[in-house]
Length: 264
Image 1 (tube, helix red, strand yellow):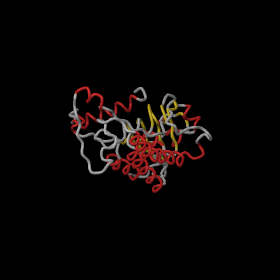
Image 2 (tube, helix red, strand yellow):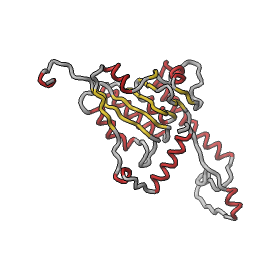
Image 3 (cartoon, helix red, strand yellow):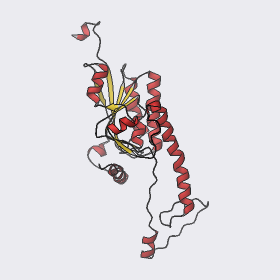
Image 4 (cartoon, rainbow, N blue to C red):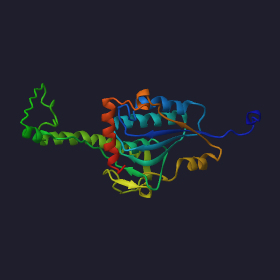
């Protein structure tokens, strides 16, 4: 009957997009290419009162994190739609980068937040090869082409170059957080050393705005009648029936390693 009474106010509509998993370009990962249609549709369909993101991510690619966050922020500014982020288990590293695309960030009392840093990890196999009597033969055009070769002993100049690459990535992350959180960040606090904070600790540091869960908080903001419309990524036929290829299996191993850092 409501549609027959035009002067009754319509309930607010808030699309809710889940960002679950590691960030990267693999078939199982959160990527800008995979999420773009979802995010664009959430901002474009009807007249949403806001768009909410439920985030549960241990991080991943800094480039994909930046692309996704930039898309969210651009659409929010173009459409003049507020954005709210709600953290479940983890919003760490790239996961926190995504959360900072929102106007405000809400967490559970046990959520893990932060890890504002950049990591480079690899393995070294040269001793194993020596024991097995295996000789590696590499010929390059360009002295840096065998940079950080895992089958050779680590060289000081390679370590120096790795740190030279990580430093600007870290600064990009810091600028993004500072631009997003502004004067809400606790002055003089050492926030950018990749530490992790739990729940209220993240609130005290100004990294997030408070403790809240998605449904009650959005009802508080937009009224008891607010309509929360879930948006999620569609899984391929292979993913639905568990027919994973080799790259998907490798991506799964890498993602498990990311989650393991946070005991999950």
